[in-house]
Image (cartoon, rainbow, N blue to C red; front, side, top):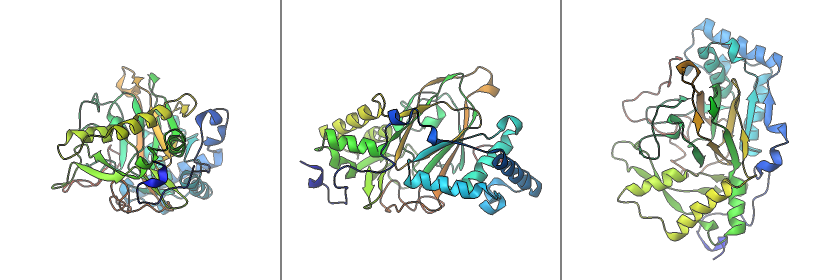
Length: 358
């Protein structure tokens, strides 16, 4: 079987080319993915935070217009385009969080995000600004746990939004390295190595909802792993959700080909030189396009002092000018507040902040 034999949905002809098809080994000495804030841009951010504070605005009431960035706004729009149509990730360095309260840093991060997109819910509780911090749970054994609640290694995966962003408040005592990898290159490698399995990118798979379903809704959903619109290859991949869906009686066991496919994707993603690894400094903001980029994290050791524990803030964004996504891809293009992406909050739970930054 070749890739074009199955299924009956649009697929690329051959390998996918473009800036999203990269290898970590080629970027290790290339610092173009690391963006630096200038002194003038930092001043704009601090002035915008001060304006929000003086007006007493709540985070959920803010718009991009409430967070004016006279020159930085245009740069943020360009960086958003780089996420969607370019390499698919970057790190913005230089936010002086050592000179800011945690609340002001959160508002700065939120305000920058508003210039690129609209925040969408990250879980069934409606959290729009999430805390990535070890809560002592194990997502491997607890079907309701999520990776951001643990210090364990996170395998390569994508999230349920256009873009995921992380702001580093405190790094780990040791470990906790971030890794990003091209889903486009992973797709190409499957096509080259096992063309007989490549069609599985475009077939329906069962994803576990991890106990975050709506009343009356199945605890799993069906979707393709990839969609192709003639220009953009968009991929959703969370192996742990694909495998934990098997706990539900209505979900069929993976076939031998499906298991071989999952093993191959993980083998490719973890090969030396495939991914790009990076360590976060306090104030670093990493943004990743979930359609073109896997992300991962190594296990980490935390500080004993609670004030020094590894702590990141997380945003899920629907881009203002994002690629077209069909309604039947992922959890559904209409699932989020902004029109697509995100996890729909359960009834009776208002969208809220995960912290105390209102």
